[in-house]
Amino acid sequence: MSDRVKQLVRDEIQALSAYHVPEPGNMIKLDAMENPYLWPQEMQSQWLEGLKNIAVNRYPDPSAASLTRRLEQVMDVPSGMRSILGNGSDELIQIICMALAKPGAVVLAPEPTFVMYDMIARFTNMRYQSVPLDSTFQLDMPAMLQAIEEYNPAVIFLAYPNNPTGNLFTEQDVRTIIEKSSGLVVVDEAYHAFAGHSFMPMLKEYDNLVVMRTVSKMGLAGLRLGILSGSADWLNEFDKIRLPYNINVLTQYSAEFALQHSDILKQQTDQICQDRETMQQAMAEIEAIKQYPSNANFILFKVLAGDSAQLFESLKQDRVLIKRFPDTSGPLAGCLRVTIGKPEENEAFLKALKKALRKSVALSVER
Image 1 (cartoon, helix red, strand yellow):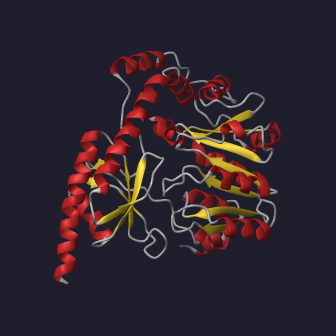
Image 2 (cartoon, helix red, strand yellow):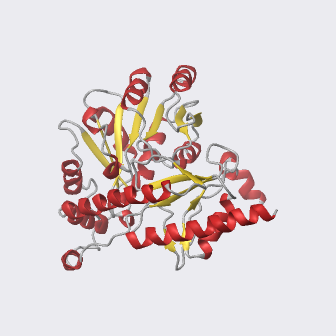
Image 3 (cartoon, helix red, strand yellow):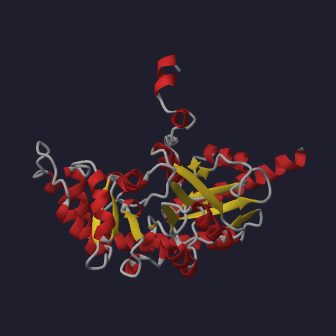
């Protein structure tokens, strides 16, 4: 790094590592919580036909008004609430933090959780404070309430279901946090399609609650589209920070088209939920691992016999890519995360997992 770069780039940015996304190559990709299904051929043909009429030489609708209305309808945003769209939920997290980044302002979140809360807090020069989850990955309410009192956070992020653990926090715990907080509480429902519960209907109950969602897990990850909903008091301020034309014309058209076929997207998510149950039953029979409850489209599990790093590499050798966590000493020590794929992909994972576990145990015995 040159002296000029060292002098000009903020110290906290220099200390960070870039967000790394592994190249899957020809492996079965079960590492990124994606919907594995494409659209039916007829739907694809209709979409491609409509693309012919998109004026890519013109700027998009700056507010994406038509798409916003469609999203609010599909996602049951209560009447009287306002929404803005982001280039994925990451941009919405950034907008929130930029708006609330007064000197000394604190971002609070349970840990482990979505890494971008921490990273974006640092990007925007806010202080990030985490509170460890309990041994079952539920909220440690005495510790959370103590942290709220001590740090008076400007914003609390609660992923619901949580990522990477996959579980829902109890409704009463989340309500208590909202009620005890003098700042904003963001309930991040990225996995709402698989969860069976939402805080969206409660927006009218709490003036310090906003709900964030994404269409990524509904099979539209490539479009990079998130929505933030809440009272106009909050959303009007956040909208001042949103960059002009942040949702491009292809995303606006494609997302609205897809949402007109929300029944097909729901069929896919229903299939994933069904396959999740099948996967959970199969993994429950493997004594060398412990899986955790999931209300998302992935399963977190701990390797009880053998080494998780060796297991991860063994799976890769069998062309199965899942998620390994870099922290080997915290609550995710020994844990791996697998996304629910197509049935044949899930079967390939289970076969490779059993093979890798046998190999890992054998190596441990030899040592």
